[in-house]
Length: 416
Image (cartoon, rainbow, N blue to C red):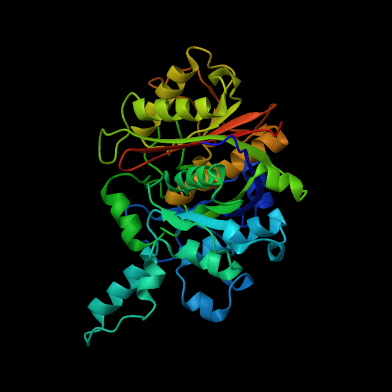
């Protein structure tokens, strides 16, 4: 791999805490919960009746009427987030070779809502099979990335990644590597997800993965708490513009942070459960740090995967403890899914945005709803609960893990 440096020059977000980066960050720092009763369908018959939905989203701000009809909600989230990041990056595309700009985008479920509705219509109409002619392109997992490229004329590298809940960190890693290889100067990367559907909520509920605190959704996601009972579904999208450092410097771009390391491993342990000792997570974090030539003791903040599931929250702290080799006091930890819910394939990028903002603002966003730390997890880690904390942050790590054993890590540093 070359010695090219990769930097972040644009960010965009559509989340349960706000539909732009500024609002998202402010609500996260203030400990706002995005959870409420589901509005996308009638959840009355479901064991879990709440989720972290995106509020007040208007696809018409970015898309024409015909584009809206031809795209699933997950693609609309993605286009909006990407458009924000592209505007934020401020590059003059007409002065660039279109083959120098790529899009690497991820989603875990793709256009599930479209597929669900079309199948329901087919099974209930009682007539000959009639499907929407846009069913296939709307449901495809690569379509958000394709539509972003189509909208802006980006003719470079373009593909999509799928690694369940590690997906958008995988996208970030791939984008970083392609820039380092000199195969692109700029890549728009991230992920989007629209999983608040009957099939998705029902499926995760059948696995007993979701919280059932229907009486108090706002406090349902409580990572590391002894009383946690499952994760809260979230939706939305996030985007980063990654750029070759020399290219960004030459055009006078504003640089938010440097992406100094990324990695991926697999637990090879279980279809849905993480390795109980966090072996894959440990190795992934170690590889990312090695790539960035950073010692574990230098990490100031870790945005952990912590979904608020009884088993899942246990293994990652073990991996962090092993990584730090007893020097656990420096790295502050928080689980921001307590506020956003779990955005599945989009989780990594929205948490990367929070990690980058922790460097910009020197603030650690909190883990809300957590009253105490489960004794099984231990008390030697600096887990920031209830309220945000001011702290100098020069290096931040974003961790994501997914069904199938996937571990994806992104490591950011203040630009030197």
